[in-house]
Image 1 (cartoon, rainbow, N blue to C red):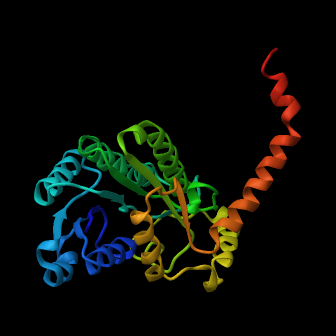
Image 2 (cartoon, rainbow, N blue to C red; image 1 turned 120 degrees about the vertical axis):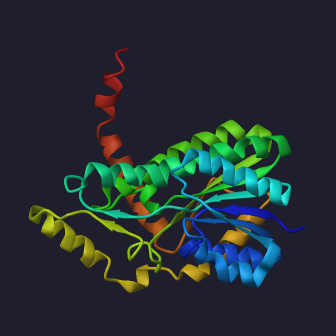
Length: 273
């Protein structure tokens, strides 16, 4: 049977690719975007199978209204995909208050509002799957992306906690953690803080590390993985996308474990008994 999918951020990138993959195979999609013009082609091609909804995810009232509109239109919701978000480039010192707050408002609170709106519906149904677009940078970090890293670490904590709270209601939660992909994420959709010259070396090293184009995946190749994920009877809590993420994270965690072991006696004595 076809599934009813609610996806935020469908104007481009992963959101658009995944929405089209669902529609092609016969699923129905509630697709949100800030600008509905970006959804005209999908609407023209798939008709009533797609419900375009204008939405700014940072608006909690709009978020609840969008989820409820989708439920009323399709009668149920099987999968919620929190995809909306963007990248903020800048060192911690360079990032302005507004840039930091806007990043967290979209990447964290936007995801939280949609999740909260969907939960009563999924609980009443007794089933559902919430898919949160995190990042490999929600598990390990890179310089010049500190607030973006922080937003994805928050998404990880919220979603891991949520999974333990809603399992008994028949609701699954999955964190999707892509490595770098050749989307618009680092292009026109990104925000760049004003730079401080003292960090030029850090920036140069970061950009040099990004020069290997083979380390960036093809966005279209992710569609098959997402279809398999929503069809899984027992979906994972976490799913990396791309071939770079897992080897890098294994290396990062090996370093963390080594350091924790090195300091374990200090840690144990701090317990006090």
